[in-house]
Image (cartoon, rainbow, N blue to C red; front, side):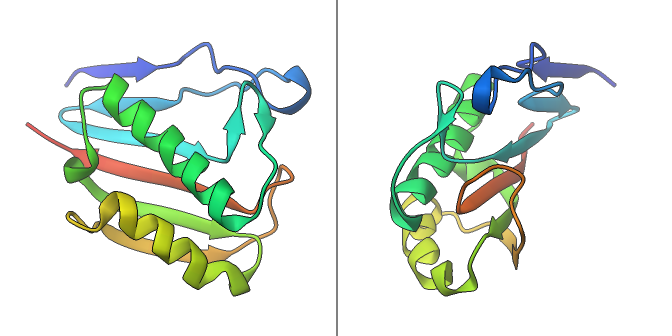
Length: 127
């Protein structure tokens, strides 16, 4: 089995803090993308659930593309919402990216580690 790690430098989080994990790990056709929030250049963007949902999913898509995968390869997403009232708004954004290829998904309410409204991770597969 071969394992390839993307972004092992970990990048930076809020306040320039080093993030000690890979953005994604690929093993035998499976790609596990770490949770993504609405962060650009180490800072969470301003805006409500719609803007933050777009950015979090764009961050996931960028990692998929870097690894040679696309939304059609995503088999499962995990979603954490800070506020359950944002569920319908998030779903509208999610559908823009995954409408043609809907993955299995879990969505829960959770207190966030950073000051954001949503976090998204995924698992993708291709041969």
